[in-house]
Length: 467
Image 1 (tube, rainbow, N blue to C red):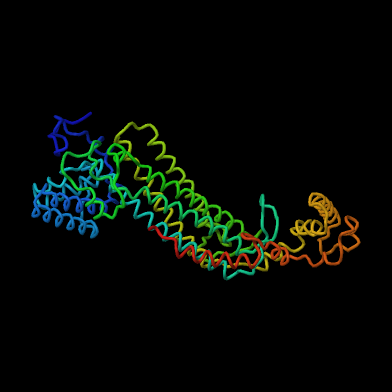
Image 2 (image 1 turned 45 degrees about the horizontal axis):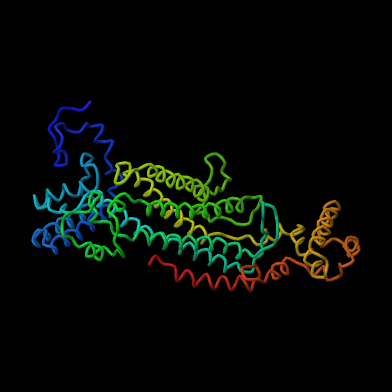
């Protein structure tokens, strides 16, 4: 039950009662939106400069406001600023401190501005910054992939479908698949930036503002490329945050796929790779363990990022125009997604740089396998047999070899010819190396194609930025 207390704060002039303490805590966002302090101050400085330019406040007042804002930013960065729960959010915390520093002149800053367009501006500035940082981190991750691929460009590994051995591929080709995923992620973030880079300030609470302001001036100061065209949409739009979270979810999904492979590859059953000790942990009870906790956590954090996306979509799905307080829930999940994505990319980059590749184990796993079955079918097809018939014949050959516990190399020519007279001595020339080399098509695993792909990839990384 609300206590009878003196009304506090100029925002409660309409009320006779003070706010209930439980409500005060419930509606406060300062525990998380303090992270927007830089963006809020940058926006306020640009807004004050514009008000002065337009003659809405004096130059002297604008200078005093800006000086106070700069001082507040320094206090926050030095850890000297006291964030107060009763002031709800970062906007009011900064404004309150500005009043303490410069007096009633601080009240002029909010001329021609609402918290609705103010927070929309802050969040757009935050996401723009996050996109730039994300693209940089993805580039570092891509470079680690390319370095590992180039260091092992001649290594052949078993390729899989359905997690069953399928065909031999170059290890570098496998890594380049993840490079391509990450390149699409870069493009998604760059595309997201186009719709984030829209300046909403000047939209007021929902209808615009009744002052002669210069929105283009503010946009130029804050480096926005265009202005919002509808005030109702500008204050209630969070598509840009949803897009960032969607792009982040896809990126995390790609990392999670690689994480799953590294978990498998680092197991004793596979033994394809070994994690650097700096990126592994042990067990609390089993001293021999070398656990891939880092990559396992990446899989787990991917689920959290998915949840953040769904959470924001759910918040927005039933909101009438324009701003609703539900939208305060847009920030925690977004901040969490940015933090999880950036930290995961950073850790995975270092993990790849220290990853050891066991080429002998890969070769051992392929030895005696039937991964060259497709090459045998191609061999018959190139001698004129319809591929479907060749497929059937080689399938029967595989069944026979399994029953005799023989590899293809161990079959005699007579045994081969029992299945087709087209088989000749040159069938023994089919190897893992010739199999890989035969896939000499654009996008294929042949060494020539992989070298070309590596060269293209290096150039793409150089072009990938958030501009």
